[in-house]
Image 1 (cartoon, rainbow, N blue to C red):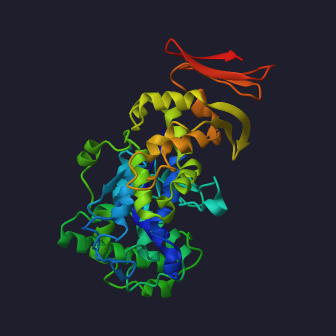
Image 2 (image 1 turned 30 degrees about the horizontal axis):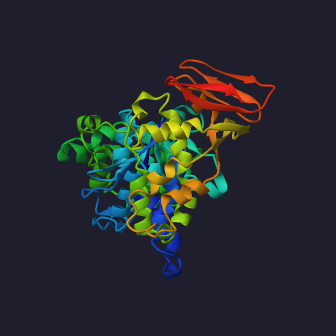
Image 3 (image 1 turned 135 degrees about the vertical axis):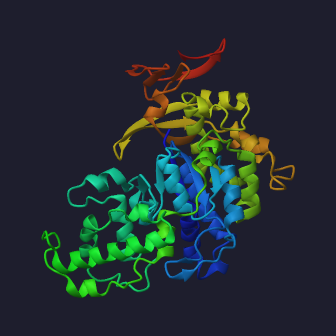
Length: 451
């Protein structure tokens, strides 16, 4: 199952930005409510996620602004929601994106979700740009270091990305360089001037200053003479703007020798293992944080639409991914009852992905969801049993590959006349001429019979 990691400082900023104005009319905890919707979206996808927060040793200046090193005021609530959904979170020693780049290099995560392109300068292998569900839907932009390095029109190596960040103004812009003019020229020139720049940051100070003196003169000479014609013309004026202090030693070291956890420590943590999602705890968190959480009917409607689709998906995934077997707090009877209620009603191809529309009777999830509420369903006329009795079939779209890879033999029948029979290594779809199939448990096996 793909494992991706999220730079949580970016997400917190995105959750906070829409409510900078008219916050009083936005309801209770609108920032955390937005985060809840984002997490629910991730929860409904077949992936695991690790959220990394900025730590106390991050640089004091970033993008020309002073960094307040105190913990973001949304962090505590965000960590609670992340844990309730069963995702992991991690506090980096320094910047989150630097820690993510190291995790990506070590193979602990498959991709980094962030809007910060500087992640490649820190050593990231794969970066996913944060999508806008409203405009991008299921489409995401994926960038890989291998593609950037091999593309004939780009050919950006680590050193080239480092020089690009130094010249064009990344997280730690140089105050004495013109970062707006002739950006593309600088980028193309970087192919010939980055050699040794990555290794230079680890040198002793006297040797580093001596290296940078020669490196800087070489850069000026290339801009002034363009000996191989790669730049198209000579850039004498541009060369004259490079100061004797470029690049600043502290900024260079911030890129090549940032504060991170040791590789051994990260490997010991065991990211992307099975962490239990907890429906009851998540419902209690929503009851405390959100206006709609105070009303059981509204809470169940929200969970039916936003949370339970992910529960069904992950329970099905647990059938074929051994590491997910314990990735929930649900009793075996609840799981069996929920999965036995599944019927397939429709199929489609969306964004190139084959999906099935499942009909699920969510009654087993209702008592578990409401079991730890502090006071939401008190009263003789508003008990969990009342909501169980009123429950109707829910419909969720699930990737067909999740059903096809079920580890234990299982049959899912459809009133539309389509049966999918599953085995550990094979799945087949056969047409059925007669409708009316139901699933039941007999002698420890799930079978299918005609009504």
